[in-house]
Each structure stands twice: as structure tokens, then as C-alpha cells.
Image (cartoon, rainbow, N blue to C red; front, side, top):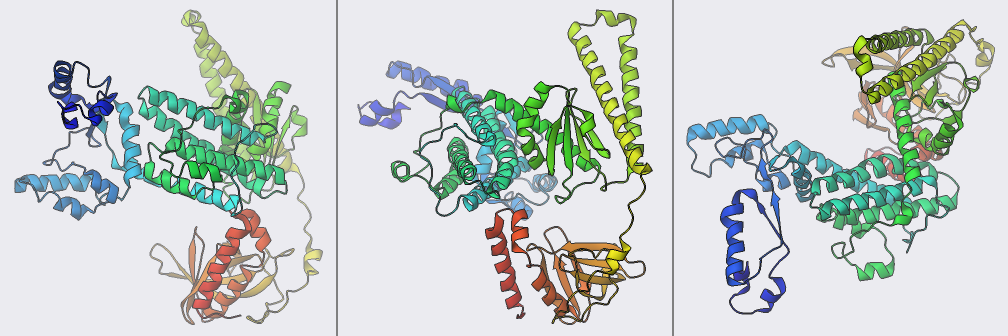
Length: 633
């Protein structure tokens, strides 16, 4: 390398940059190139040209084959960064001197590996993927789908910062320092996770272990910051505690600012773009105008809370158990927020779970989580989710599921547990079991205890559901329903008939109803007559023959409505679904739905990410669409 510095002259560059510290190269040229550099430097300069050599891996295709034009598996980095179609890949084979037969074979290989071409991934996603692949040793089996996954992860980082900027506000001033004193537990936990991530990343990079470094950074951003802390931020921002709001905003800002600096060597372009958008103290921004020259993060021991991290880790186990139970019972809607009880075996366990029970409620979409020491405090009609031998979760399901079907399901689980216990006891009663190492005997005994705890909880839940079945049904309030006042007339639509569908009660009043046609079936060719009913809370379509609900839309700012064909059809859609209704009264329906879908800003602001500001922005967008479509009023 000294020849590039105008050796044998004693130039300033030669004195400054030779010898260097590190050489990065491939193992395939180690002996016929790197060794010669060492020998020439020793002979002519009398010193080693570098002290360390980092050997990178050889990049192969996803199947482990060496890249070859004849196989059609050569991946041009530019094609991954900018994206390319399948035809573009085929054209890239024409510029060489391949035989036509080889070109045909290569095109078949490209079609098999990249049937839709290669998506645009960007430089940062490709860089991060290649660094993460270094754990494979001397070869990297590059799968473009993994690069695409990191590109989507870049979008997640952008959305996380956008959400933070929305909650920080335009007048937010970045703190000059943070103190863990009197901080909420969630803030202490995320700052502890951040500093542990810094510690792990710096240690891995010092040892040139780049894959563990990327894993630590990815885990912090994905699983700690986005999946947990940002979710815990939302109820805080909706509360009236200004002190906790300020501490939470400062913590969120610190996680983003330090996290971006931590990620910068692996994703320089994205982190620079996002870092420039973050508000910063004036002196700090003046001293470091770019993230490139900002100092790399260092671990601060005062923000390490090992005990709190253990509690939060355990709370995530409890949360996953509750989520799994909700999934088993089909409770997939965020509006279904049952109460949860955590039965703890002793006071020590309760002290561990109790402080983070509110976080479990937020993350598991529960109404409230209560920690108890006695099952007598738990109501009947709960689903059971054993967490371990110390904690069992009870989710109140009364009114949400069918008790008879649940009893059958739980009885099957009891039978499966009995079979597992019998199999384990048969194993422990074998003559040679005495020779088994003690650690395996202890593990088997722990399994027996867990099975016994699970069995007791399941049997208790079965008895609770049996009592629900045996209880007399609650009397229907037919007289109160008959006295309900009829809804007021609207200018846009004729008044509804006196007879209301069975689902209209309380504050849910009919605004408009009428007959429509909806097409369904595999090809959408089957016409179905439906009764469409608009209330002040939702839009429902029913089968007029038996008045059963076939579908509904909740009125909210995310709902969109537009006329598809004048005097013929209109479309109602949300990000989750879309329905087309056919009626000559299409324009009137679209107009009245537009009016009533935006009726309660405060209620929807409490549910929408970003609060009232985000909801108001969506409302303004819908008003503009309505104006463009010719609606007035």
C-alpha cells in the first residue's frame, strides 16, 4: 500500500497513513496477494503494513452455489439496490459471450429464483443484510428475500420516528441530560435495554463480530422499542399526567437519538435522514451538524436495571400466554377487552408481577389485570392459561364465548395432560431410571408439578363454565325496548319505519335504511338482496328473510365511502375490507354516511394512533374527497 503514497519519497501522506491498522480482504487471495504485501513492506519499509486482517466471506446464491453467469445466479448489487424486472435480468445475460444454450439455461435459473424480478431494496438494507450474514463463516448464501425483509424493517423505523415526532410536538425541546430518579418503570426499562444493547454492540464490534452486533441492534429496535415501549407510550399520551408525559417524551427521544447513532455504521443513509429530523439542543446540533461526526454511544451504568429487566421479560411471557388464549377463543378484535386475573402461588411472585400488571394489560389488550393469591377472588366463567408453576392467567370470557363448547375443549386438554403425566410416570418407573443424571430427574419432577398445576386450573375452569350453563338466563327487557323513542328524521333520507332491527338499542338509533343488492360468491356473480341499515354508530347489512346480520362497518374516520356509478352503486371500505352496494339511491346513501361517520371526534381520537391530530387530518382528507365528488352540506 505504500506505493500509492509516492514511495520512495517521504510524503506527508506516507507518514500519516502508513502503516495502517486493518486490512479487509477475502480469504481466497490471502497467500498470493496479502502475503506479498507483508513481504514487500518488510523488505522495503522495514515494518508490517497492517496489524490486523479481517477476512470477509464469499457471497454465494441462496442455494449455496458459487455465482456463475452460466447458471444465471449472478446478483448485481445495483440490481438489489435499485430493483430490476425479470426481463431486465434476462437482458443482463445478453452482454457477455455466453453460448445461446447457456443463455437459455441461465434464463430458466433466473425465472426459478426471481419469478417477479428483484424488488428495490436500497443501499442500507443490502449493507445490513450482508453484515448480518457474516455469522455463516467463509461463505454467505445470499437470499434476496432477506434483504427485502430488512427494507421493510427500514419502513418500520421511519414509522416509529414519525409516530414519535407526532407525540413530541412542534414545541418539544430535547433534554440536555436524563436522570433515572422518579422515572416510570417503563422508561427505566427501555433505557436499561438501550444501554445493554450499546454494551453488547460495542463489545461485538471490538471483536469484529458484526453479526451479533446487528442482532442486538435489530432486537432493540424491533422487540423492545417498537413492539413494547411505543405501545406503552400510547396510554400515557392519552392520560392527564403531564409529568409522566414529559418523562415519557424525553425517554422516547433519547431512545431514538441514541438508537440511530448506534445503527449508523450499518445503515448510514437512513439514520442520517431520520437523525436530521429529530429536535436537538441548540449547542449539540451546532457541535455535531451530522450524525457521521456525532460520537458513538457508550454504556451508562446508572441506567442498568437488571431486576426490572427480569420483571419485564417475565411480563412478556405472561402477555404471550394471554394473547395465545385470546387467539384460541377468537377474541381478535381490539374492542374485546376482557378482565384478567393472575393467580400467584406466593407473595414473592405477586411482588414480581404486580408492578408490571398495568403493562401486561396494555400489551395483551385487556381491560384490567389483577394479581391475586387466592382463587376465591376470581369470578366464574374464565378461560385458563397456565404461565408456569408459579402463575396462572384467568381471562373472563362470560358473554364472549359458548360455555358448552369450551367445556369440551378443556376436557380434551385434561385428557391430553393425563396422557402426558402417565407417559412421564412410566418413564420414571423404569428399572434403569435410577441411573439417570440428577439434573434430568429434577427436570422430570418439575414437569410433573407443572402438569398438576395445569390440571387443577383446567378442572376449576370447567366447573366455572358448568355453573354458567346451569344458571338461569337473564330476563329480556321487552317492555323497555318497546318504550324506546323513535329516531329523529334526517333531511337526507326518509324516516325509518317504526319497527327496528333487534340489534338497535340504547344510543344506537337508525338514521336510514333501505333495500340494496350485494354480489357475492367465488366470482362475485351471485346477487343477494340485503337490508342496509345506517345507525349513528355503524352500517349493517342484513338478510331480510330472517334479519340476521351478514356484515357491518363501524362508523369511524378510517371508513371511506364513494359513489361508484351514479344512481346505481356506491362503495364502503376500510383498510380491512371493501363492499359494493347496488341501489338507485346510491348518492343519498353516500352523502348521509359521510355525515355520520365523523360524528364523534373525541371517541375515535382515543382509539386512533396519534390522537385527535391524526383523526382530524383523516377527516379533512375525507371532506376534501367529498367536495371533489360534488357533495355539499
